[in-house]
Image (cartoon, rainbow, N blue to C red; front, side, top):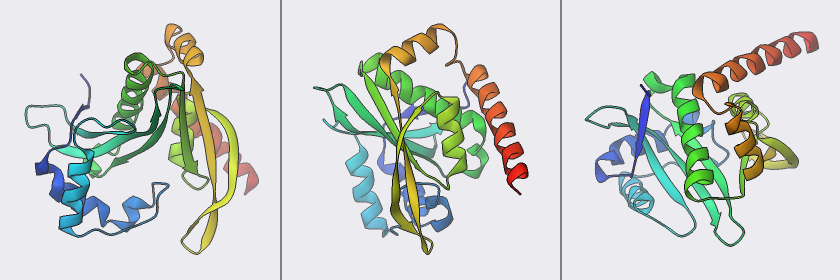
Length: 206
């Protein structure tokens, strides 16, 4: 059974969004800057996330039960149906009970399925700050290829950060999917290997 489910945003989500949008530590995990919101602004944000839009789509990550209580959200942006591309705009899991690898992996797999199997895109891009180690490792586990680095593109916490730009192509996704690389168990095993390797490399540097 999956840990989480995915649904459209609803007005009942506003209190959760308001809390998350005003959590500076939580927002440090995203590429965008920290911008506190009033409750009214949070409600407008939720309304903007509802339904279908030509260039972006948001989903509430929710509990996989009858209540479907929101625990976070994910989104696609820059949806370009002519060039068949989109950007994995971000993932935020605000409920600490769901900040484990299961919810993260299920969210990534959901985005991949929607992008490549439903929208039939040819290209999915991603990005992360060079300090966001978990996002970088998840991108590696999901077989994103690094395309380049935007040097010192974001100013946060008193210093400039690089943005790492990544992508997955449809032909790569289909090949890896046929090999079973996009099952939750395989992605988890891959993530654990990458995590162990990253820790070993850090110890060598230190």
